[in-house]
Length: 319
Image (cartoon, rainbow, N blue to C red):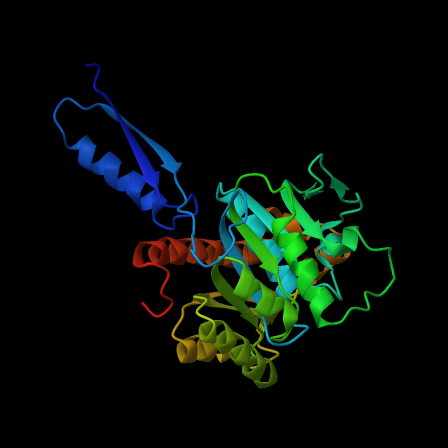
């Protein structure tokens, strides 16, 4: 009556890469309607939950995402935290699970010191760090003491961390896996309703070969691949801004092409990113380092978009 139009758009994910375009299109179209003076566009979202009849569901978790690599030292944990922070920045509810039983590190990189507690049902309660619920053996085990466990004990602990945790309502639970294709990976793939796996690599040939093995392992057990993130893609000199490809170039793009998945991001190597990890503040990267934030947000939107598509296609990784 007063010339005000209101449109409510429900998206399949708060990290939809086209949401700004949708808003512009709505305002443009309604602006051409006679009598409409101004348009209000309200964005909501409803993230589809991945269900697998043969797998045990994780209470309150809609989508379980594995962050994996076949090799250590490629920055997989760094990228997992950055992905969680980027999804949270986009408005999603996100949790982090450290499934590296022998070498948990998320709590160090995020500055977590509070120990895990149990609720009245005996479930582990996540520790909230930087607004993100986190579960890691690093906040259970005694500091500096090794976890000397064989495969069956590792698998049992991974199941405990998945299913015996009082997770809040989460659109996405990101699982930081150890390197390789061992017990933790197989337990996750066989026992949990994995929505998909994201691969992290550096451009080096030695990393690419190992990461490709990890990717093909997930395909072998019918887990969709969401894409590849190339970490340490290039170095930016803090003094002059010069860009140098220390580890050669194009490796992540080639790997993504061989696996038939998108290259989600190319994250530069910067001293500031390293400093945040050492300070236990790596989740702040999306607010402090624009050159990294842009790539992490691109990865988050790509993952969310691909999960939305896969949920409509029934989760087939090859569609």
